[in-house]
Length: 112
Image (cartoon, rainbow, N blue to C red):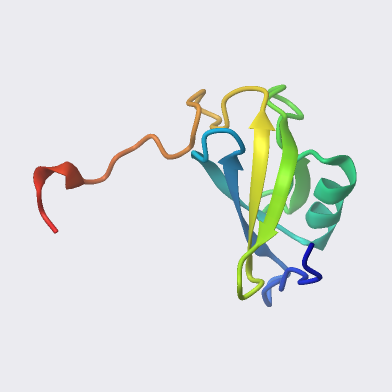
């Protein structure tokens, strides 16, 4: 296990990419401050920092769609983290499995 620690930005936050531990599907992207990081490691449940509400929130605290930590990785620069989780339900507040359900452009049409 690496001793690399996350490098929080000037705003005290780090980007957290959340991925399904079984399928590798990206479920959501959120932000963590040091308290959210420590809570996630301590409880093994994904906890984030809400920039709009300026407070911690554990994923699933109101919806029941808790995300259980299976692995955590830090990128090579230390300025982003990857949480691999088992999710009890949809990741998106809309009820979709992933927050990335909207396709912007159809790249399957052969353009490079």
